[in-house]
Length: 271
Length: 229
Image (cartoon, rainbow over all chains, first blue to last red; front, side, top):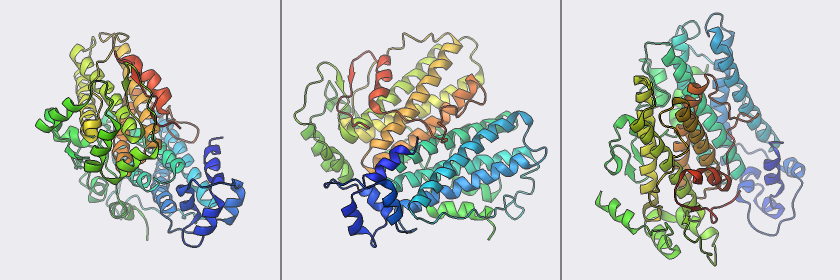
C-alpha cells in the first residue's frame, strides 16, 4: 500500500498539538509540525474525522495548486485522444500512458484533500483554443504538441512551487517531487514527439523562454525560464566552464509562482 | 574565480570539513536554514570513516551526495564525447554535448552552493564501460540518469532547508528530462517506465543509492552520517 507511509505520518500527529492548534491552524499544518513531544498515536481515522476544512492552509493550498495543472493536463490529453485523426496511432499509447499517470496524480491528491476535510476543487471547463488563438489545436498535430509541451513544462514548474510550500510535510513533499519528475519525463517525451515530427529543433528541455510558438498564450508558459542565477552563482560560464546561456537556462527548470501560473492557465479556462 | 580556487583548496583532503568550521561557514554565509540543518542531528561523538571520503551529515552531506552524482554524470558524458562510440551521429553528438553542459552546470552550481563544505573532485572508475560500443554507453547513460533522479528525489525528501530543496528540485527535473530522452533512445516509449503504480518516480534513500554510485569512483566513499529515511 503506497498510502501506508502517509497514514503513518498522519497517525503520529500529536493530539495535544492538534487540540491546541485547532481553530487557528488547520490539521494539515499540524501534520507538518510533528513536534517531538510525548506522543499518544492517534488512529489515522480519528484524526481525519476531527479535521477541519481550511482551504487557506498552506499545505492544502499547495496541493490545490498542483491539482490545478494536473486537471488541465489530463483534460487536454483526454480531449486530444478523443479527437478523430489528431494523434497518430503509434503515439496514442504514449498519450494514454501519460494520461493514466496524471489521473493517478489527481486521484492521489483528491484522496488526501478529502481525508483531511479540505475542499476538493471542481474541474473547470476548458477552452484549449484560447478564444480561437489556437483554432487548430485539435486538428493539427503540431499545434497540439506545442500546447502539450507548454502544459507539461508548466506542470513541472508549478509542482516545484508546490514542493517548496509542502516543505513541512515530508511525505507530501516527497510525493510531489516524485510526481514532478514524472511530469518532466512527459514534457521531455512530448518535446521529442514534436521534434520527430520535423520542422522543429526543439530539445527535451526548456531553453531560455523559447515557446516554439508565436502565440502569446503559449509564450506565457515560459515567463522567467531565462533565469541564469542559481544559488549564489551565474550558471552561464560558471567557474570558467564554457556553459552557454542556452545550457545555463536548460540545466534548471524554474518554479512558477501563482501569478504567472494564473496568467497562463486563465487563458485556457472558461470564465 | 580566485575565490573558488581558494574554496577548493580549503576543502580538506578527506572532504571532512570540521563541524566547527562548517558551523562558522553556515552562520556567516548560508543563513538560518543551513544552520538549523546542521544543528538538528548532532553526530556526537564522531567515529572515523578511515581513509574513506566522508560525505558529511545533515543537509551538507545530502548536498555533497547530490554533488557526487553530478560529478559522475558530468565525467561520464565528458568521456563519452571524448571517446565517441562507433557510428555516433551528429544528432547524438549534439544531444550528448547539451546534456554534458547541463550536468557541468549542475556540478559547478552545487560546488559553489556548498562552498567550503564541498567534497573534492573525485576520480571516476569507468572500467566497466566500453566507450567504443554504442549499447554499452547507452546502457550506462540510462543507469546513471535513472540513478541520479532516484537519488536526488530521495535527497529532496530528507533536506531541511528550503533553499536546498528548491535548488535540487530544479536539478532533478532536468535530470528527469535527460532520463526520459535516454530511455526513449534505448526503447522508444519507455520515457516514464520507472514510475510506480501511482505515477510517481521511485526515490532511493541515500544509503542504498550510494551503494551503487560508489562503484564508479576509485576512492572509498562513506555516507554513514547521511540522514536516513
